[in-house]
Length: 401
Image (cartoon, rainbow, N blue to C red; front, side, top):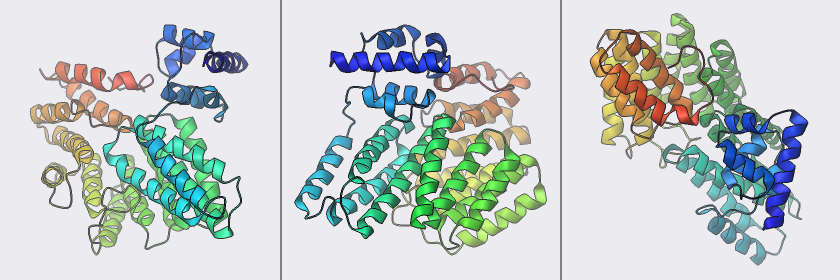
């Protein structure tokens, strides 16, 4: 164990020196305590699996640094992988249909877990499965098994990228998106290819590059099978990008196309699956879009969406989506001048503990508007934002509190 800790520390020091990044700066970017990181670098403290992964992503080590870290037990992941390994060993081939089927089911389960699982926790589980699948790809298998494993790896890489965007770790997210896109090309899987483009559009939307987000959302629609979920999601994403650009005509056209696509859809058996379109998601996207567009109907629409999400009228309650809906409602209320209710609604969203980091900037946007009006509740809201959100993010962009 000591040897593994020393190897990790030595490799960490080498990478920091090679990239010209000081220990203090590395700690600031991860983020973590610089004193703790100093002990990790000297080999006297064990890095957590999450810290090892963050350092690997930050320093662009491509998994080599994380490989030096002592093995870490991830809740649930080891049991899942052990079950797959048992199925594999029972098969006549190196892999076997049963093992591939279980891995496909695990990837689906993780996509279902995304809306209710903290992104850092889910990322650890996804990484464990990616590591296991990578090992399997070196073994003997049929062509059909090989293709299925590559497709599963593509979905897992895409989900890893989504979690990393939630955590605002964009370079690592881009690397996983490139892997997923490459695998989509090799297997001819148009749905994964389209989701890669849509996910990149979403990343650019959260980072303020609205024009490129609109372009990529349109590219995703061109790549996607028209009957698939990625096509609908990309159309809704296009509407949001146009709203941020203030392009009313283009925005309403994309909203109308989204509504036409969603109208005939039934509620899926597993509506929480991130890559299977749930009609209720369209309502939440419309609320966001109308709020950004400054439509007077936004507050009424957002209030209705929030009520349905909390009541579970269209499937099970969706607490994380409801927290985002509160941000939509609070933004719409700032536009209509109801700043007291806007502040209270935003405070409920921020203190719920259900917002993911990719939505923190949206909370900051509301807080900036409320703070500029000098409301009595603005101070409490700003403090809550700093406590629940700012600690998990890199330095804020100009204009955020």
